[in-house]
Image (cartoon, rainbow, N blue to C red; front, side, top):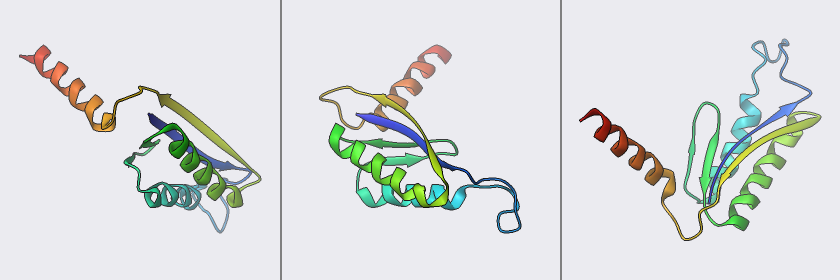
Length: 108
């Protein structure tokens, strides 16, 4: 399965002397560090982190990443999207490759 998720603290994130731009990058870095340490295929973009694996292992990483963000605020927001396709692996790249092939056929 593929999971795209975004996790961020609430109760902070406003501009202050310690955090002049109101960024939550330290909290997000804590979550991404958990994903990277998992050993599962993953990709992080400006808005989401994608992770691929079996149901239990992927959700364990999402939970651990969420737990890593908890110290940064009084609550945490988690946005999650899943593509559950049993028997398939390599879909993080495979889906994009198939899209590019389809776009190439349209252009040609």
